[in-house]
Length: 297
Image (tube, rainbow, N blue to C red; front, side, top):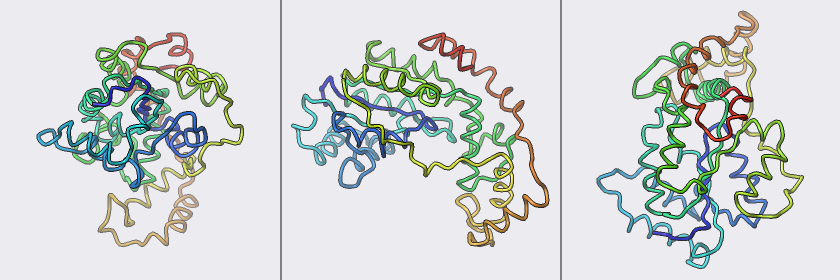
């Protein structure tokens, strides 16, 4: 176990600018003493062990050996240490099935750690998650995306969007001051407030570097391109359709032709609203009710 009370673990969620924090924000400010969990030279082995190891073979001794292999004790014994990994909050498309297991492992390994949880309006989260699913080769239309429950796709079970259930579980295992909830909409609409709130939680008094901008590799697609992309994924070689015949080099031509023929197809906001309606009921118990109401959680 690592007993340091100044360890901070940023849990995500997915689609809340976690990549920006991993690649840009935390590394640019040395005061966070940020250690990369996906770097092979740093903590990748430890990270994968926490995320993937079977329950029957997982043990704290192995976890500690992997952690200490990458870091000398002076780097984590009593000084501030920051970790950030959205997969700690579970995999959205697999219904966050291992969310509890991962937190239990983290809590046992870092019994005094502090946790950061960034949430996002459920409607917007669904739209962004569906867009990512299509970008990675998914073929389901929105209706099936929100209804399928199989080994490849079970987002429709809704566990990932039950924010209060996740928050409450963490809070039941740590003191209330060791779990901080932030809202993605604040980061978008009033970033200075978001950053100040984050820094206060870390007990840091530093200036945010103005040159830090959001990583542009997370590209947004407009609504008409999403439908064209889904059409392309149904006939081309993708992670979900490896046996398809069309080569990736024809991607832009196929998408362009689809757009020219069929034009814009409106994303079905009502499908999304119906899907999140029951999930939102539980979220009214999250911290800061005024923000929950303002951002339609």
